[in-house]
Image 1 (tube, one colour):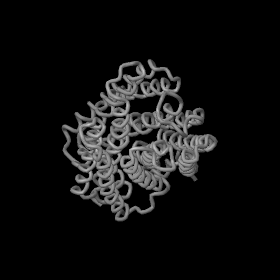
Image 2: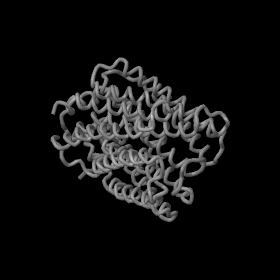
Image 3: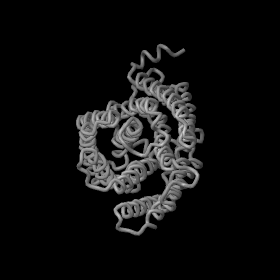
Image 4: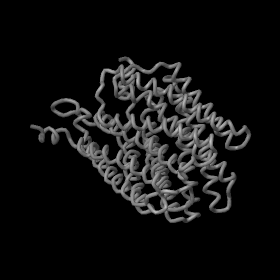
Amino acid sequence: MAGAANVLKGAKNRLLPASIPFRFFGAAVVFHVLAWLLLLAGAPAATGFAGGLGLPLAALHAVTLGVLVMTAIGASLQLLPVATAQAIGSPRLLALLWWLYAPAVALLVAGMALAAPWLLAAGALAVTLALLCYAALLAGNLARARGMPVVVAHSWTALASLAVLLWAADALAGAYVGASLLARGTALLLHVAFAVYGFMGLLVLGFSYILVPMFALADTPAQRPALVSAACAGIGLLCAGAAAVEVAPVWTLPLAALAGLLAFGLHLRLMLHALRSGMRRELGRSFVLVRVGWAALATSLVLALGLALADRPLPYFEHTRTLFGVLSVGALLTFLLGMLGRIVPFLASMHAPPGRRGAQLPSALTAEQPLAWHFHCHLAAMAALMLAVAADSVWLVRAAALVGLTGALAFGRFFWFAWRRMATPPTLIDAKLP
């Protein structure tokens, strides 16, 4: 399996200090807990949420910026040097990026939760600055890339999506202080499309071409269909953007959803082939979450197509748009948490010093019981949350938030176990072994 071997060799040769990716992953764990707490406190306003300052908006952005983007940054800082065979920046510079981004997200979430427009605007500007710095680091790395053109193509399109996303997000935040640059409907459509399917979606698809073959011990997926998938995704985003700014006819928006479905279908076919042909077939609960995330993302695209065709909430269900938000963001969250269940022990094992019995294996750095608790709690919480939106039930939202919070705390325990075992001197670990 040459693809997996090359990735593993590249990863070992281009490891960042453990503190760099792990500080981003650790912050994501904290924001994960915070998101469920905010949802629990804001349950009465959650089922019909359609925008506006308050606890539901804060919970949403604790997930999107605090968990999804935080995880994507940490993963990309480690994975892109492997993919492009180029360094991405000094450890001190990458640590500074964390100090810019994590407090900025906290400030933004606080402004939303407290319904404080000027605090929100300050947080939005700080997040924009941090993400522009991140974009500059990635652009410099991609410009010097010498390998993995599929990952590079997805990453460039993700960076272009980030620019549109930040423009729309700052317009939405600016509206609360009387400085909007776009109509709210235009900014909202751009924000959702280029955040979920542009920036985060393309990073997820692009880095899957590294991670899935690596964990399954499979060959690298075929390059041509992967590039066709990336091109379809780009066409879909262009159609969505043109429809949002009203420079294209109304049928362009359903075309965007169709292009997205085609792109994801091609990608999923390649991923499933890698899983079927890989030497490692049993990938545990983490890859069950990955598969659930894939299914939910495909379903969200189908729902997006239905909304684009109807241009209104679907018949007999007035909260369709809220359900779309839960489904699309939940799909990315489920996928990334599944991948983190594999990435965290894998990275920890590569950084951990060997003991008397040799290198520490990822399995020795995995706390299985907390990971199992998280698996069941997360799936139950997401199912209950979608049912709560459909039934317009505040009590179901509260139940989903409590179960999700339990799962998030269990995932935090899993993360802490891997970090502590990685940092514990090997002699102490060996002394505890029979």
